[in-house]
Length: 352
Ligand SMILES: NC(=O)C1=CN([C@@H]2O[C@H](COP(=O)(O)OP(=O)(O)OC[C@H]3O[C@@H](n4cnc5c(N)ncnc54)[C@H](O)[C@@H]3O)[C@@H](O)[C@H]2O)C=CC1
Ligand SMILES: O=C(CO)COP(=O)(O)O
Image (cartoon, rainbow, N blue to C red; front, side, top):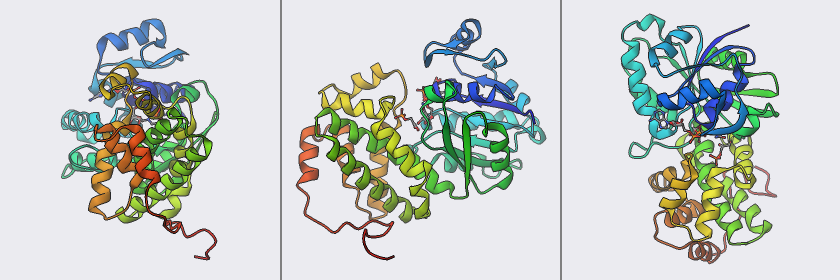
């Protein structure tokens, strides 16, 4: 059944998902930059964020939030595709717009951002809960996460994702909107676990980039991925997530993709740090958000607050904060005391 969908955020991921959804639904892509949206409309291509991909002719564009909201109405799907840092201001603007006709505000809001908000240390859905708290028309919230490079999705290549929400109606709306045409949507009720996996894997992808940039070999990369998964799981468990979530698409799946895939922006940051480039130059030249850069320190703070050991995350935070060189951080990791291979997922070789 055809749906009305608005995607807010015309970066790589918002544009890619809009390309996918517009093959079957009426989709509006909203961006805050009028000049950029004009280019999308006239050139039929997102030259800044997703070059080389022809946008579907049926895709609509707007810079007006109220138009994007009106397109969705109460019964469609509203998708937030801005980075974590942009979520709070966007949600506040949505709430302000929604005051005018609360009964028409979208019932289902799906978030795509992966990271923790700096300062508040909140996950994306928690930021939204805070903004919409006390409002008569609180929407049901969900997240979409998993291994998904925007460029591959835009080209229609196969992809499997996890939609997580406590609201069954939201999951059904997401499946209806996105499942099919090469995209598989798996449902999960563990919103927190799905978001923790998506946030922390970006930090670990920076670690893998550093290791590969320093030519430490495939063994080192596999070790970082495996011990990284243990770090994600330990933190998630301490925060109230379910351990099995981390073995799924939004945990192991996205971790492997981002730590090994050449398209990863976070991994690219690590490679360039290893080459000795200063972080501010890397970020300026990247042209896209690399959420791990902004989330690493917050993950470390959460690890301390929950008393969980996250040595790889600490090493990445040290390098990003300029406290250690990449080579020194790696030496420190290797020099740690020997320990049993304990993970919250169970000890290898030991019956749980
Ligand atoms: N690119 C990818 O393959 C995937 C990205 N993600 C996540 O999706 C989120 C967005 O990523 P991308 O689209 O790739 O980033 P991007 O860097 O390609 O584009 C970011 C977009 O957000 C806009 N933006 C930034 N701050 C904003 C604000 N305050 N208000 C409104 N718009 C704002 C920018 O103008 C730009 O259009 C990130 O959290 C990322 O981790 C998730 C899955 C896949
Ligand atoms: O989240 C992603 C793939 O699932 C994108 O990763 P990067 O932000 O590192 O490119």
